[in-house]
Image (tube, rainbow, N blue to C red; front, side):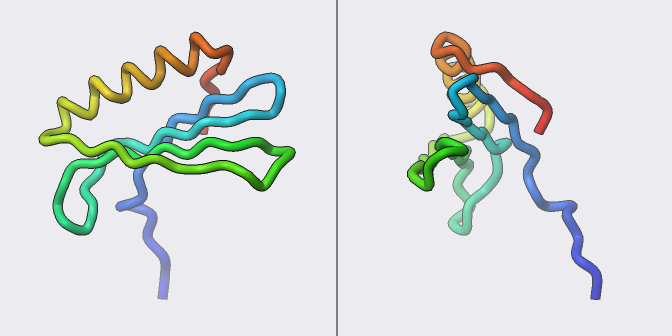
Length: 83
């Protein structure tokens, strides 16, 4: 039996010099069929962190949400790196 990664969403990773990170998953559908974007945040020095799910009526709504999140992360000193 082989594992397939075809349905795994790609992610955008942002890091900061102090070890903080922020992950943004690409828009996808949840179990109820709604369009969602999941973000995760934390630190490499701590087990604390969290996640947040943003819901939208359609993918274009989520593109606006992602653009706003990216803008905020950059303003807060994060740098995007290849995930």
